[in-house]
Image 1 (spheres, rainbow, N blue to C red):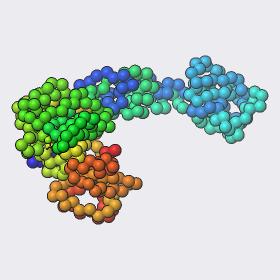
Image 2: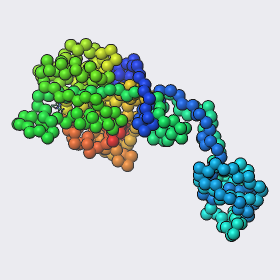
Image 3: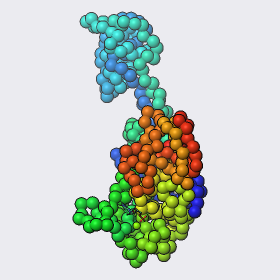
Image 4: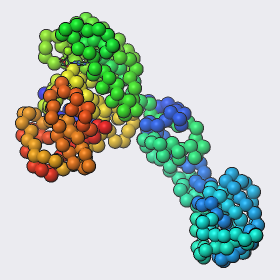
Length: 388
Ligand code: AMP
Ligand code: MG
């Protein structure tokens, strides 16, 4: 048995090798950059107008209107002192322009422009290179591509990016009692639901599974199922069959498939029978079958490794601190990840903390960490991971 910190350290310390691929910009969201990006040109590439209005030459209150530049126009208008042109947001500002006045602060009579106020030098002109200059680092290697990153990369004219590949993930669920939703079941059977939590959590963080298999509680079936799954994945996530019951065959099947145990059992609640192992460059998590245990272990242990394998700098969910809304003592006898709701900046520990109870987890939005025996009074700070 290891502590939570030891388990997380073991995962974090794994030597990994990353792969990369070229992704069209459209599909690059959530990937980490494989290389540093250098600006191929200044952004913006030319001085342009931040407003719909008038580009002015010299500082006056009246100007002669001599033309118009719209966004996309490439014509160059030679302005002289006291002249102005109609201009629109994003349009190239004439070289001699001193400022742009927004149209709301102007009036026009015939071809004379009157300003409501004196312009200032450079007003409403977005300068060439104001955001990036040619040759400057846009993003470091490992930068996680979020929507604004994609916008910036697009503005640099890049149509595809070299990114770190995401791990290929397979899921195995185990249990004789499990029936696929939609199928008839008999007394004693239950519907298989963990795989939906796992695949949902994968999707929530931009991952998807490659293969999902359901296996009976039978040693040979488990061994063969694991062997097959390991043929096509970087990370195998198994649900159930990892406890100490007579029908728990996962641990031995992993051993017989050449998977080396890195830890088994974590001093925590829920999710004590968590297993983590490795076979060369493949990783295996065997999550306890109880629905809340399985999903909690995913968020706390699996996600950080998936992030690392995707080349992210920051791995796993961030821990935030929130004041608790009510007194609470952890009498579970182990450090606990508790189903909780963070509302308006305060955290409430929810009823229904049993490992099988998923409803409280579904209604909440956080996992609150409370140490073994820790007593919290109103307003005490609690460490929380936000899960939705
Ligand atoms: P196990 O870890 O296999 O001993 O399972 C512990 C508990 O979780 C048992 O009550 C199982 O019926 C339940 N369980 C295991 N796997 C699943 C699953 N995929 N979906 C729903 N419940 C499960
Ligand atoms: Mg089972």
